[in-house]
Amino acid sequence: MPQANWRKHKLAAYKRGHRGELLASVALMLKGYRILARRYKTKLGEIDLIARRGDLVAIVEVKARGSLAEAMDAVNHTAQRRIDAAADLWLARQPDRQKLSIRYDLVAILPRRWPVHVVNIFQG
Image (cartoon, rainbow, N blue to C red; front, side):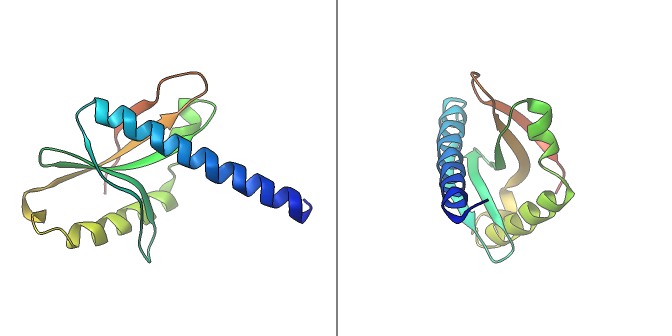
């Protein structure tokens, strides 16, 4: 792929990711979650969204795919390890960490559909 096309492709993917995360945030807020962080970066990995409802903290991976099955498959073992490690670092910095419950969720951004929230996509 020529350099200019590669840059266009990367920029389009970056914008698509931001739009997907924004849409996922709105969907979660409508379900009563408060968004604590977007694109939380650590040395071990990145968490797309961190959302909280009461004492439940949802570590949310956002995937824009053609189908729900494709989105779920994209959260493979390697991604799970990376997300879990980043979540551990986030949790260690929380003063009320003792009372928090952590859950790993997926929000799938699918064509021409409202985002699909899949709770407990994996165990940390």
